[in-house]
Length: 406
Ligand code: PMT
Image (cartoon, rainbow, N blue to C red; front, side, top):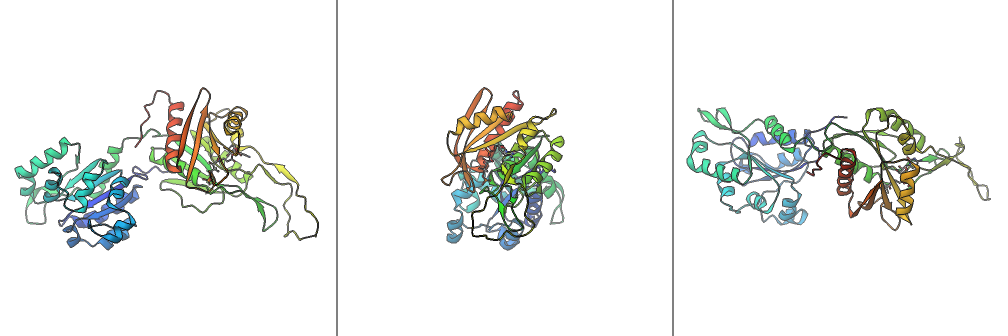
């Protein structure tokens, strides 16, 4: 498990004009290596130095430059882009962009986004040393700092012109390190989270199996949110078609017995176990070595019960904090409370399923129940529910820790 300091942080990178714009290409790569999602906005002057295509390839996202680009507006409008950003970083920030930001001028896409977004702003200035030292630039920088903008650099050293002094763009690694420091350690820093996700497939013969409609999305969202909150996260996934979230490690399994073995191997290395997998309760008593043939008569399959993985973990002497899910189609809360007791869970997420809810959907609705309390989480995207679930885990596991959301 390797935590990434900016895992899943949505960064809007503004690139303004100047010879240092070429360094922003490496910055995009470094930000993505650190786990961030990056969308780039170029000013008209920046586009003279580096092409949008380069940034598009490096960020794996469409690059925006004009306010009036109709096709781009149809894909993600500028207001949506402003809401998408969790952090705005301008690197390099020219004297001109700094001046326009300081005065609230919104005459291009980048400055408009900065006004329209409530995301924190970090600027990494790069310009000629006399421009940097000019009283106007220094006054503009002071104005931005007073509004809580973070100023990264500039560095002191040789410039493109044969001069030396303050005005150089910080190195991309320094900018990434500074941004990582700004995120703080996260409420789950130093903790290891193990998540089971997806269905299990219980084979009947070489081509048929008993499965269910779990897509793995809920469990994958929990692993993604855990990393974003500072933890290291490991997924044990049944057969699903999802990419592994950045910074998460993963082991794929097929059957409940394989999932049990993989989970039990990881338990000594985890602090929190979240069992979001839809584990098959039964498997065929015997696996037919060849494809079963039609006989013209009814077929009776003999099933045997699978081990209950989450209950087994919760019964361990040195158990982690254990969270189970309860997927129910009726009497959701009553059944969930019964599972909380019977399986000796620390927390259960009661999950109404059926009628298109819960399984194989992008959103979900949960009621978190624990000994002494409950919390309804209304219908929302699974990633938002995952964050809320982990905040509750932090509050229950570390009652004195202040719960913080990024
Ligand atoms: O994967 P998605 O498409 O995103 O859908 C998400 C989900 C609906 C699958 C998920 O949110 C969910 O509710 N998962 C639990 C599904 C389930 O099997 O619930 P259950 O009530 O049958 O099991 C109760 C708990 O015991 C669960 O934590 C389950 O992981 C665990 N269990 C069950 C059986 C078993 N043999 N071993 C277990 O560990």
